[in-house]
Length: 495
Image 1 (cartoon, rainbow, N blue to C red):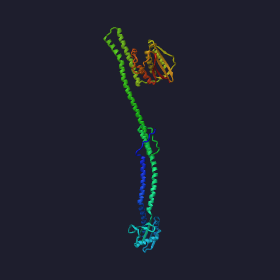
Image 2: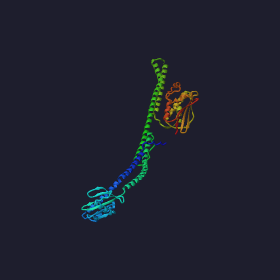
Image 3: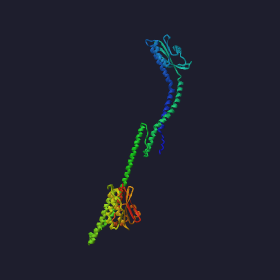
Image 4: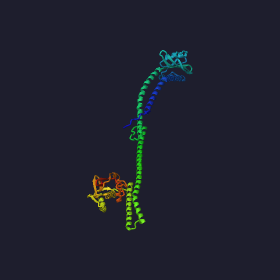
């Protein structure tokens, strides 16, 4: 289940969007304010520069040695048409030398007023130099403002230039009002565009944040899937690689930790097995060593001088030594099997032939114990196993049956074929194994009936060897109690 995305108190998307919106609104407001405060001054300054440029053209034409009306007209025609300037030039005799524009009569009258010192009401001097006087005046007939410039060039040539000032104040007001409307629309549209744009930028960031959050919980399934070819895609790819590396590293660490735990557990088990082994061996060897020592001391001290007694003492010592030798050999075999140092050689052989040969070799023992061995005739059954170890398993089961056969003293050997396996069973008549002892019979040195085990010289290791061999070949084995006896069995693969 996908986790709910955590709410971000200070969202980058909101911060970026609001930042851009405020910047845009501030820019529009600044444009409106500058337009309102400085547009009119800027406009008048441009008009003033146009008049000065016209003045310079007039001076250049008048001061030219080859002065002519054609030269003056050539100089002023472009300025007049571009900057909407009207002008008049009088010669030293106050005759009109050249006039251009649409206000010739007005200019002729106003230049004579200025020459005679008459100044129209509402006129304001803006700039005064040695070559010209720049004025701002109002035409009360039309309520229009003008910039006018007049002066004297050289030896008495008089000029006057005039350009109208549009109603800039009203124009600025209209422009500002229009700018407000356009600004509001621009802010709204820009806000939508900026919000979508920032969302497109921040969505991959939030996706990467979610991935990193899941990584903190050791969830490495999430991967960045962005298709953009920008820095975020590089970051996402690096996070994906980091996720894979972390997952691999943690997996290796967990594997190593599990192996370490197994090694520690195995070491503890080995320590326990060693302690148990030493305790059991000490216990098992204590009795035969004591017997050997006692009878050896008796011989040394000459307790009995007759040959028959000495022979009896020697037979006891030899019998106990033989039992100790058998037990030590079995312990060495068991140690090799449990430590894994013994190699299992899997080979194909006839299990029926192996069993029949062993039963034949044990006939002397079974006849001596007056035991009847029963086994039906079976065709050859080929199995895959370690032949030597399989014989040792059957030997332990058969010897165990011989040692515990009572009542009718019957040993019944059977083979049961199943799918891909054969079960070998060894049944002997006698007392069943107590239920509380069944889980322990495969343990080293465990003896159900210690007195009887001691009687036939058992060491309590045989079934432990069976367990180790069958485990090494990964095959099943077990025991079944009956009212009249016990059956031990093991299985081997036939294919």
